[in-house]
Amino acid sequence: MENSKRRFLKGTCALFAGATGASLLATVNASEGAKAESDIKYAMIHDETKCIGCRACEVACRETNQVPEGVSRVRIEQTGPFGEYPNEYYHFSRVSCQHCEDAPCVNVCPTGAAFIEKETGIVSVNAWKCVGCQYCIAACPYKIRFINPVTHAADKCDFCRETNLAQGKQPACVEACPTKALVFGNLKDPTSELVQVLRANPTQRAKVALGTRPKLFRILAKSGEVIL
Image (cartoon, rainbow, N blue to C red):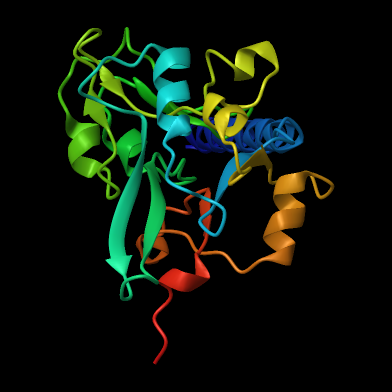
């Protein structure tokens, strides 16, 4: 009986020690993960008060990222005219990936093709992993993903991650905008132009009630506001 009790106590102690060790290891790993957190989180602002609907951003994106005809990573949506002639005006808004911090497209992807880059927060796609199941297209509440007719993989804006950004440049749409209606930068850098503009202007983001935490901000055109 005494031997049985000793074996039981010994086994219990070993189990406790193993559990404690695993807990400590998890704590250390979590601590290291926190320390390794990136100091970059890219975002973009579209200032609708400056946008003239020239669509230079669309052309630059297509040429830089070799986007086939018939699909687009970014487009400018025109609504209007509002008002009465000769004082009519139009409203121009950007339609592109919102680069959500909690991205539904990433959550539903069965192969890991859709992912959030840890170093930058950019929501991107590994075309070679994509099987074309279109789960991400169905899950995106902003309806901006599409199947690239050349690669047959899901595609969308990635802030020119593999083109301009990789060369140390701004995204093609930002560089091409003649009125400086687009501002791109690091949300974690308080000195960046992006953060300064956000602090100085009221902005909106689309469908924030869904909890996706989008990183595409809009400065609404005053002429497009509804006055009650």
